[in-house]
Length: 293
Image (cartoon, rainbow, N blue to C red; front, side):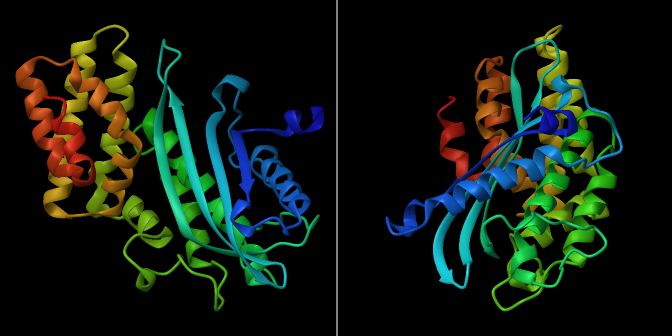
């Protein structure tokens, strides 16, 4: 473990692999080995050129839920990814990303190395390289959002790395989630939104919400909450120009509980304005926001 800790860089990831749906006949040891390998892949790899101190590492969770054995060491699974960011002068961690990816088929033979090469992402076996490609993609998305939250447009470099994975992704009969035509909520569309000039204001939202909003609340709650209200106004502008975009829905998947706590203590007029906007911006959670009344 000492060597792993010494090599660890950007992430403090908790990786869990579950295979309960495969029944009692499954060889559970294989998935324990896979869990260890994925932990080492994420936590032991250097993802950026920046030096992260131990306290700066990004807290995140990867839950791989294996749902079907397709034979020939090939499995169907869902991947749930969550990541947080510490808030200045507090012990609180704010969620910056929370998603479930249901389009994952991969091949894994016990003890096979977790290989990922940015120049040759698909490798010789698309199904074998699909798992590391998907995990690396989400690592870069998390890095991009984290960097965005600390400096204006700070995450662009990592969103471009995610784009590179999408452009060179494994291609095969059972591989999906990488192409525009495969649906309107997938890996392609998330990175597209994050790099598309039509959504440029979203990066302003990420910076303003965290640095000028949450990070200021220790000193001035009202000023911090006003900055977050400004973010809701910016998101309304994006929603009006680009309705039902994946990036806005992704934002609220991470932030809905936090926003309820933030505005439940706001003055009545400010709270009502927030409820109004949140109910339009985040329709799946509209009833929850209405309960704040």
